Amino acid sequence: MKILQTKWKNIIFVCFFFFTFCGYAFASPHPIASLKEFSGEVMIKNVGKWIQPEKDLPLYSGAKIVTKQGTATVLFNDGATMHVDVFSSIRAIEQIEKITSVSDEPARLRRIRIMMGRSKYEEQPANGRKTKIELPTAVAALRGTGGWFGADETGESVGKLYEGNMETFGEFKELAPKIMNLARAENSPTWKASTTSFSASDNKVLNIQEIQAELNTFLANTDPVIKASIQKTLSQISAVLTNLENKQEKLQQAQQVKHNSETQIKNATQNTPKEVIEANKLSGQAVDTYAAAIEESINADIVLILETLKGDTVAIATARQAKTQNDRALGVANKAVQTAGMAADLASTTTNDIQRSTALAVVKSAANNLEAVVNTITTSNAGAWLVARDDETGKDKIENLSRMDSKSLAIVEKSVLLADKALAEVKIATTEQDAILAQTLAVSAEQLSETTQNVLLISTLAAQAVKEQNSEKIASLTQTAEALAQSIENLDVAVDAIDNAFESQDSDDIKDSTDSLNEAVQEIQEEIQDIPEPEPEPEIRPEPEPPIDDDEPASPI
Image (cartoon, rainbow, N blue to C red; front, side, top):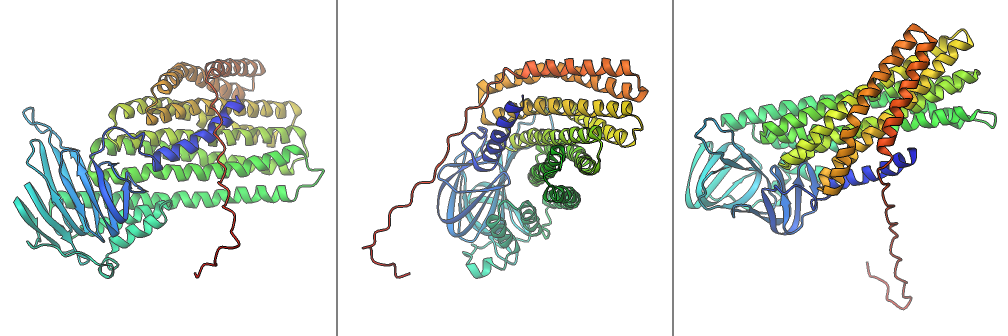
């Protein structure tokens, strides 16, 4: 089982980051537009992640186009076009408006939000579509229109039609906007924030601060809808940044656990028991896994901000649900890290073999539980990823998996508590029998954590298959995940029985409960073992450098 777990683990992280942040070939079939053409320096942000521009690149609701010395043309699904000039920052949002009565037809609301720069927008009249140009101080509602719209670094809103008509609200000057230049662009906080975020695209704090700067350009807008949206999103950003600070503070505390473990390994001698080395090595790795879990959890935070920005209530609810699950999982992870640190300390200082082996089992349990947490967060974020692309079918499948994950996470919580209890009991044991009981509890916690981790791994693989739209994998993995649901219930019952048995210190009850746990674990292993192992990824070798021709003249540079 460990072999399956280890091989899949690396595949998951490679696939997840590829499909979430780099790829769009496997995205859901619901983009609102495409990048028709571009030239020069153009930056594209799709669902919160900077990606390289490419001809016919699908663009989803909330996509952002930022230009330096470059231009871009966007083709919407209904034939409307948007040309983005140099030194501009524009976001395109499209959603279905709420139906307010039985007779109402669903209407698409398209919002072209211009933070800075100049854009030419053209569309033909169409039933069921409304278009608004949102500028820092004004809003223009279009009616089958072609025209230029823009905002300068001071936030002044301007625009002029050459065809059709519009209704404006707010401070708006009816004149053609000028093309921006670099000197003026550099005076714009939102443009500078975008270029900074682009240059450090993996920095999630910069990502959030960029959206914050963007929203600040609209604080002077008096449109009540925009004002409410801006205030709501800024409030959400503030909450996420505060939460992020708390996460970083807890991670810094956890780093002390890793430091202590590294010190123990460094000071080890030939006489140091191998259990001590292994316990401290796993303890340090647990902190690294905790850091990965925190980093991954921020993705749901960013999706929540983006969906709040767009005003998509369904997507907001999904992202908030993912965030809630993630925060719960991180609480479990933090507890597991602290338990691992205390267990590693005990292993390093005790001279008692039973205490040492118990401590090692506790550390192994903590390490497994932290891996389980990463799987839980990955699955939760997959749902937010899909809803941001309007993939309702995929989102529903992920929600089914998340419900199973929630039950599994409850077992992870109990596993962490069992391990913590075993550690506390072995420290105060006054007889060998008491120490052996604590050791049995620690081994049960380790076994439980490994099994739960594998269950959550299957759920994560199924979620990845949904994102990839791989129907064959979806069928087999979701079927396995559904079959595991009842087994998880049996496992949960066995965990409670073990906890109660150790509370009563009844040796017969302890034996019966551990036997029940073994049966539940065996049942799950039998359901999982038929999963085929992934084919090894081909090794990518760098191409050899061409030989240097000594007769070649030296470069003048």
